[in-house]
Amino acid sequence: MTSYSFFFSYIPFIVEGALWTICLVGGGLGLGFLIGVPAALSQVYGGRKLKCMVEFYLRFFREVPLLVQLFLFYWGLFPSIGLKLDPLRTSILVLGLRSGAYQSQIFRSAIESIEKGQLLAAMSIGMSRSQALLYVILPQAFRISIPGWANEYAVILKDSAICFSLGVMEILTRTRYVTIATGMALLPYLFAGILFILLTNFGTGILNMIYKKFRIPGLIGV
Image (cartoon, rainbow, N blue to C red):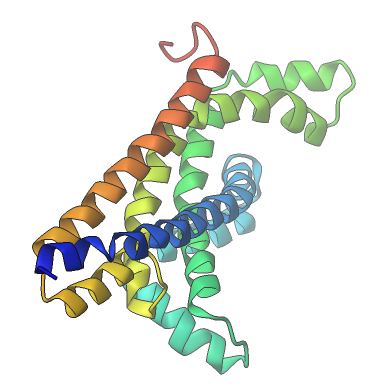
């Protein structure tokens, strides 16, 4: 068997890693959304103490390298409190916390772009503040945020490769195993790059289609 045919026999093994990568991206984006929305609302409408707490969270997860955060949680924080999480769950948690910091800025910008009078108008017809935010402000903010969210998808997809450092069996980890088994580097890493390109274009393409369907005509130049 030639080295090339030997490599091609490992392609399904690498492709299977895409499922792990999708799991990392989906989990990270989902958790980031659940964190990012309240963080954005806190920045826009919260009190001083709450804003300071959110700012500390944002600075930590935006300024500390992802690799350091992964090691900190997996080797440091979790063992110190007696919590045992496998590499996949740890990676999703860290990616989610990091993504939440960035998503909060996406949602905050969207919220601040909405005319403030809409909140007052909603409250003037009997809505509570929370109802006005839930039914008037956030639906518009989510639609405005889709382009930024598509970009965050691409970013977290590329960041997911760093979870290789914890041994998560995603694309890069499996590619590394194939390079060791075959003694080849060019083809395995080229194939991994193509997989990332396909996943990036597939996800951003879907989000762009959603944006075109639900965009708000005449708002922020669309």
